[in-house]
Length: 200
Image (cartoon, rainbow, N blue to C red):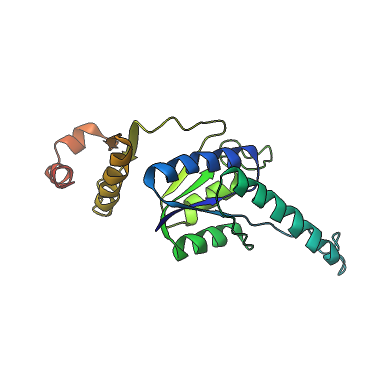
């Protein structure tokens, strides 16, 4: 069965994205797969010493287990707890499933430098081969009416546009395909450009 992968760091934006993903999964009749990754909070070793004791690992693991179970219960879905590098974890999880898309919150637990996107969201944009849907903080699911797709008219984007047409049909949504040109005079008179546009 198709799956929507939902990484979470238990922040409010991540929880909101998970609820949004639940609505999508219901409409698309797909599974949801929750995953969480945590880093061992050690400081840079100095003289062979660390600021974090290894014996505290089970307690940290237990806390994260409980948070993931709470989220899974909220979403009325099974939990599956995995650990590792978050980007690698999400991509591995997506690769093992018939992943329809990955849904993440736009902001993580947060530092001031993360204005619009959490660092993991930025890394996912750069390092995933799967469709990625980022949900703004506090954005609630109200159905999908319009889907915008930006393209440079490359042939590889045709397959993506066709997939988006199928996706849009589930919601009765309109698909808007946009191509932005830099120099209108040169491009409009360009026969090769016109051919690419017609072919697309």
